[in-house]
Image (cartoon, rainbow, N blue to C red; front, top):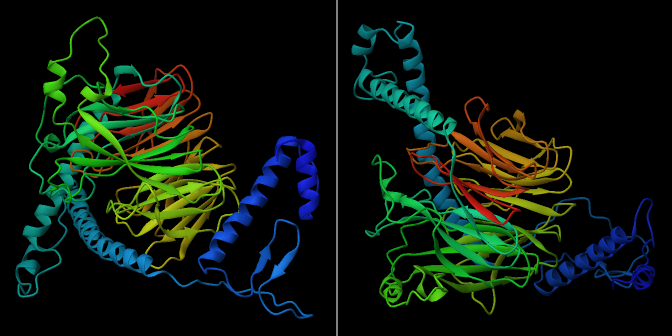
Length: 543
């Protein structure tokens, strides 16, 4: 019901207050909507057998029905209750656990090397030695020495290379300017994402791995744009692109029935040895209560077909002659309210969505279809609308944020809440894990970026970044060309900004949009390209 009288009658029927202090008609309708959403979520959990026998049943007619035998003394549950996980979720947790253990082992070993090299490198600058050479030569080489000369020399050279590369990156960013601008849609663009290699750089696929950009807007469509060079040329010095940046490579004008609020691209993985050729996947979340997975496939006939198109004054390419085709492959339905954000797990096998129904869900990518999306996990725990979501680079944790200013970190391997952070004054709408694995960046309506230390479970930095709501955060890639050395942010104040991750100082301000900047992402490579999309319907590239 939407009419004031119908809303009032429905609240009275449910036994709820007709109006709370300070509520207007819109707030009353929102409160009724959330009450009905909680009832729908409870019914869904009851059908799957996930409701405890002692839990109270929130009936929409206002009555409270208990599934336990009636008694005069009501039993109150004060302990945290757990539900039995289905076999599909157990298998998914085993996959994530094996993946995260291997990734964390490699990341921690690299961190140890950098720390040892940092000690050697900083002390060598002061003309001092880390160890006594005679003592080290006398050490037993059977088990090795912690400060063995050869290994320490390699570690110190590694740190020196990182410092030199960081100086080049910061110099490049300070000289960034607007490279190109393109109208992306007839309505405002709300989300943007770029392709990445993920954590598995040893791809078996021998063909090209182009950098592409995906955008979603209020019209409900998805478009693919040229991002420049090939991913394999990231560490190979200067390269040239075959086509101009921001050229339209693929489009599907109608994916959702309403506005797209979040978009994410699946990283290139070792599974790209498919006989179908190079494929990737784009996930989108919309306010039409659903998310969709779209397969982006290289169109083999695009080049030959485009030669046959007559140049008759209409020079706009139709979708059949674009380089990529976008095909819907899964429809994820189940949320009781509008969706906000979407993110792929580093393995590429799972995707997470957040919603205004106070929950976030985990879906299986490989078994989902257009007929039915395979839901693995429905996780509640937030008292307000859930908006932001981000996965740890190891694949072990996921962070979610809500409109109450709460940041939750969940352990995907056990299903428990690992920790939570409080510190934002208003809504928190985005979260992003750093490639170093022990820092989490969050931002929202208060215009500040907060950096949380996951080891100490407390904030390590607070950046007064923007004068309005911050829409998106993105760390640079973990490849050797960027190494997570900077953080990009976009805001409703009409700017994008780039920050150093070493001291959190401002490196560059991207000014060019004629309104709100809705999204931002980073292109892999030495040129440190950044893409932004805005309320002015444009997609901009900065290099």
